[in-house]
Length: 363
Ligand code: UT7
Image 1 (cartoon, rainbow, N blue to C red):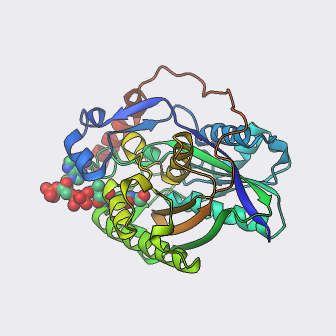
Image 2 (cartoon, helix red, strand yellow):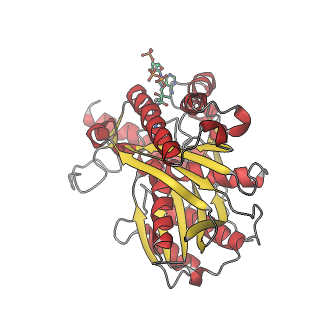
């Protein structure tokens, strides 16, 4: 039997930090509300493109795997925030990292994009069609937000994470998954005019009509991830106690705690980093996976359960059996181009633009 081991991992967080206090300078909100209702203290805002974040995470993952980019058969970029729709953002990653022999594509399953990508990359390797695949989750949801809406604009941050998958014979890598989507609920988490549905000439530039029904999304996130997790554990005939580590999507600390409770997972078995990065959409799971490895929380042979939920409303869960190596083979010395802009410097044109657009709409 052929498996797809995770042999490399890397992440890329842009340096500009947007704190809760920064948000309170232009929104009617507070650190107290955001911390207690979401668990978020700060998030990152990017001065570079989605593809640049994705490429650096990818290069770091390749270094950790000791692999040359030219050896990759495929690059899957899980993102809802491609820099361009035509061509796809994955082609920019291919060109940047030098994956000259790889098929590449963007995969939009919103926050579940990395888990979907991991499933597809693993299936390509297990079928025998490919040997080496790079799976990246990278998102810049803050680009789409309406900075007059205080419920949604405090939740998201920007970043990227990546893993290298390689064919192997012993049982490891993703060993079971359950993916799905509740399309009938797609309207409750939506940038409704973010594609070709948008009137081309409205006279209002750069404003997205975001619909966000927080409490309903919250309920469905708990239900969707809960069902996916139950189903994937059943497939493997595993009891929740047999899971060594839970790496959940980081959307809200209260969603994470509800899931952990359902799985009877004590805090030491749950990876939480939402306080530092907020919800980075498709990037939360690979970033959290990298941090779990960096802090020694993954041991060879561990069974790791991951679960995610996002716009669509997509959802999924997967069990990963970790291989024998938990340290990188080498490191990538590259960094993002420097920037002296603060997060508020980067966001200010968007904040002012949202206010102006709403004034123009008479709201
Ligand atoms: O990756 C998947 C996508 N996202 C999610 O999964 C997010 C899921 N939803 C959530 O995390 C939560 O629903 C939120 C954090 C968005 C909101 O928390 P909540 O406990 O569901 O609050 P709520 O929407 O029921 O609002 C409670 C109150 C309201 O005030 P009133 O009407 O009770 O006076 C809101 O206006 O909190 C108010 N509120 C705020 N107050 C200060 C909403 N946002 C804020 C804010 N600062 N940023």
